[in-house]
Length: 292
Image (cartoon, rainbow, N blue to C red; front, side, top):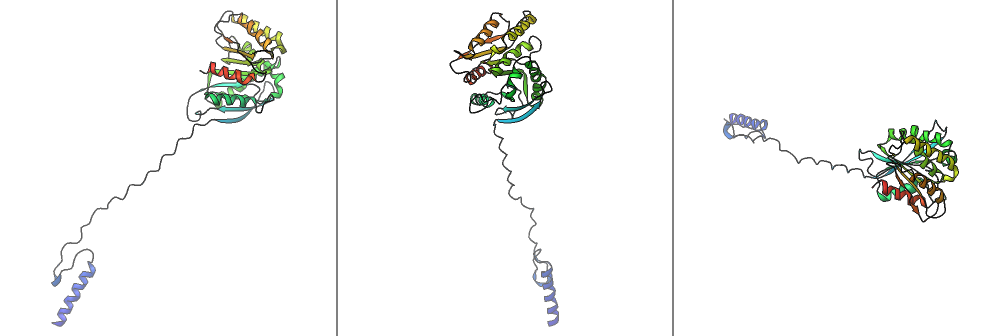
């Protein structure tokens, strides 16, 4: 009997070892009650989604480029201002081409920087292209060299800028001061009536005395070629109010005003300042008028 009891006790103990954690072992050789229920796995906390990256700030920037002209045979460094918002959008922008871009004219910074500051101050959404190599200003901005330089602008520089930046080809300005102010006006005579490249010409303190006879001859040829047809552009002939190049600027303005060109917006603002000081004042005035 004692041996039989021992065998049963060992059998019960083996049962408990084999099924521990699954079912309870009952006494006296009988099976115990059911085991713990098998529950489905519970979902853990949802993983946190990363915060969206902040949108890039709408800041302006300046790009440096360079172009070699096949017409003049000279290199031209370029400073290109892209206004705030340009990099975040898809809109096409007006382009302002500034002659004498790297000239300082006795001021603390270049003409490009001075004009750029005006655009920044006013929040004007336009691209500014400062064209350098002002050391060639007498050769490039006066005739006969101006013929080749204008070909450089129309056939090399503008296609270069249009291919790299979002530009509005119907809204281009050409601006210059003093000697470069000559070409900023007379470029119109080269383009009209059928090859208008720029829609506005802003000449500031133009030194028209340097080539008065040729200027008049080219203006006459333009007038004859138009034969009464519209001239849908803006020409601003700005000057100091007294002295400086004011008499020569006024003379060209009066000559053209007497023509009564159809479609031409012809303006002659004057500013009480110096020859160089007129540049910033006249450019800002032009920006207000053209980019309303």
